Image (cartoon, rainbow, N blue to C red; front, side, top):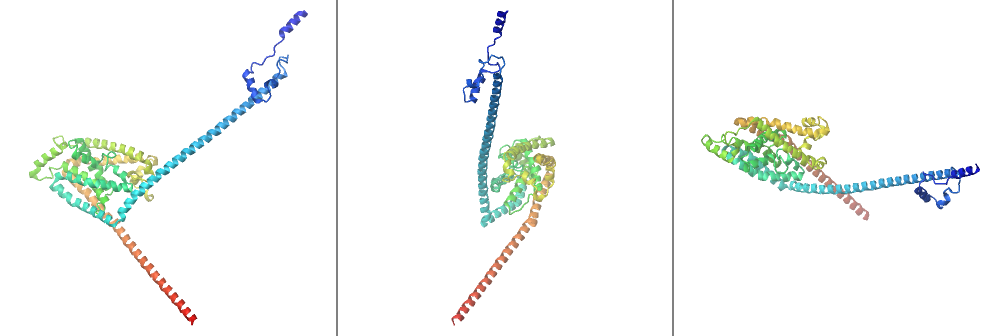
Length: 467
């Protein structure tokens, strides 16, 4: 029995081992946190014969402390990384902002230099009295010449009208582009009366293309006829175009809006404008020169007028939106460029007109979309009557007379209400300046007299003292 007990006691003797949950690499990592060798701080497992002893709890405490220290270091590293990330982000953002600000400042400086250059050219043109007088004389000749010569050419030589129109376009359009460019108004050139597509397609350019290149295109003639006698001609009333003879800008505006309609009028009714004896000759010439109107299929239907003109309008509106309202939006919003959109929707003196109220009907965020919808509606409403102009010679003639009379009426209103007021103000300003100059001269003379009196009194008193 004694021997069995001893054997059992020998079997129950357990070799002290590291707990399974304490890995070797953990023990190795603990050495990083103590100055003494790890063997001096680790519990002496071999020296203990108990299965669970105080050394076990000491080891647990040390592991807990080590874990806490590691966790604290991890948190410190995280905070350090977060701080550095924030610092890097702040430095990067600050660098980007400074670079962006520097580039914007440089761009603004270049823009200001460009504006000053245009303003300098414009000021030199306006300050030089001889240049202003020459310009106004030239505008007067062009305006009166068009008013007097155009009816004669239409009545006596209708086949010359396309050439007459081309010659005037050759010098009026470049002058308009130069003047508007110098004033920052050149985005107006891309409006419907000028263009259908940036740089190369517009009503006036389409008319020139039809006259000299695509005279056999029936669809092109229909689009020109509908647009020139529709929205472009009606713009004389909408935009209050004025036949002011001494203003080259206003004379050119009237030319741009009424002459395409006059050209299509002559081409459409060339036989009717001729004498009864020359009708066959003029008809043959018209059909040969402009094959689009030759044959029996030269009538225009209401469907064709609406569909073709609307397609051309949508092409223009899409390109105008992309090239002007999107790509040049920043310049327009800063006021560096003026467009029909910004001009019509500008809240001048806090008063909103009919167009402004309609454009802001759904709120300011949709004003551009509403403005384009209004333009499309205006285009459709003004194109609808063109079918009757195409079918009736007298109605078309009366229409052009009314539009020309409207421009003359607007010009008369300008001379009476605006120009005369400016003239009176200029006379009053000169009179006030003259009166101020005379008053200043009189005051100066009085001061000179007083100074002379004081000098005389001083010299007299000195003379008396010397005596």
